[in-house]
Image (tube, rainbow, N blue to C red; front, side):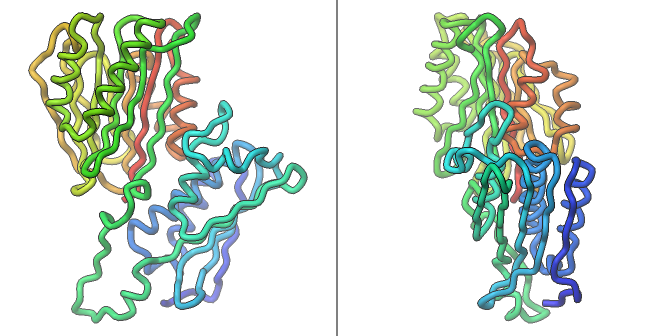
Length: 354
């Protein structure tokens, strides 16, 4: 593999301008030239997540990218160092969906999943050091490819958790303990469903209805969106009803479809312009003629679903400004910053790598 004479590059990270430059430059390093588009995207995401943590928790640090070349394997070694306050509980910080307020969400777990080798050391006096190695899976195969043979990498061979990152958050309106807004993520062999729920009303009754909806979705996670939406309509009859948006990700085609009824929103924040259509109606009371939209996912796509507890216009604008953040802390930040006090609020964010 052709590499430049320099095998290690260092980037100072003090703010998000520094981080954007680091992400862009790491993906263009000479020893990353043989990586697939998917691998470059994952390397950029790893640098982005580690740099975001430096900015948020240490304010200053360094990211070092080096050529990894051992035992016939080649790739990139990423070292992120800071002198911040450290992480009190590493075991918790490496769990998906763990957050201590505006702190770690899926950032570190996401990096760990994408890396082939991962280690972290953190102490209150010496800060945090993260080491992540990404090995180019196709390095050995490419060395045996003749010029006439196709050079192809099948992203579908990756585990689904390495193809994307999903974050969500919901909270009740001011003065309430429980929320009628909820996000459900349901997996089956062929698809993943991300469902945004906004039950009519607030408080304990709306919360109970949202939990019942979640149970129906999880018990029928193999259903396509249209029959699932019809089933939810039947289930909700006799209640105050709900607005629901369903995003289905097809694991075999890397495509998504969207179906929604009522006052929910959905938009592709990064990537080809797309806006979700939600038909006027209330599940349980009035089921409109359903319309399902289908699109393909491209590397780097970011899609957000939200309830009307968030403003429709400023939500995509806010996400554009913070697009570099990991999905889970970004979902929390969105609800905390823009959620309306007089309403429940919920959102889900999908970041697609593969």
